[in-house]
Length: 229
Image 1 (tube, rainbow, N blue to C red):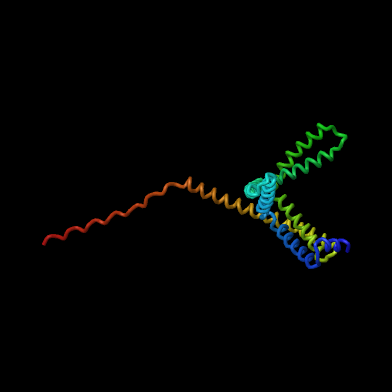
Image 2 (cartoon, rainbow, N blue to C red; image 1 turned 60 degrees about the vertical axis):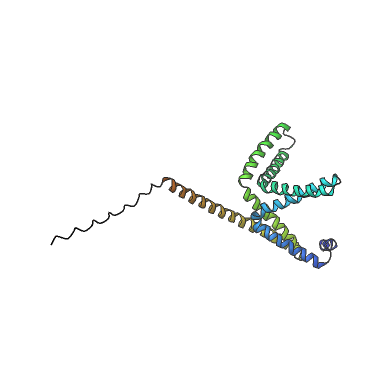
């Protein structure tokens, strides 16, 4: 009850709370079940927002609003381009840094500093390789987790009990991760089948024997002349 009153004080009327909850549930469903396909576009949008904001702020520091607008557009373009193309590298690097940092902390102060740094560096390289190899599964995991959290919060704002909202969010998380992983495996098999057919047809074109000219039937001989009278 106290949390709902706090939400009412922040968001306003109960109607606005219901609308926000419904929007959170809708966004959570999209992210949980289709997040992997939308990830690149979403990251490009985030990059455009960050780049445009930084460019605009830098232009304002120069006290020139025209320059701020130009830098905002340039920053939005560059941010969208960078975030759209390096999303896999960035996400794999973040996951690897997280694993390496946790490993560094887990070793404890009883281990020497050099050993901890060396072990964390090795774990960083290994974790980055593994994360980049399974980047699609990680994207599905992250988007399904965010989608489940949004649906849990939205369900709670719609009036469900906290335990029920948590259970619904957890269920959506597991279902979304499974469905997105299966969808990715299906797309991967489909692309592999297409590549196999393309290679097969290319080999057939290379190793096919040259076509033989079609033999033409000889023209019939003219009939013999009639006998003399």
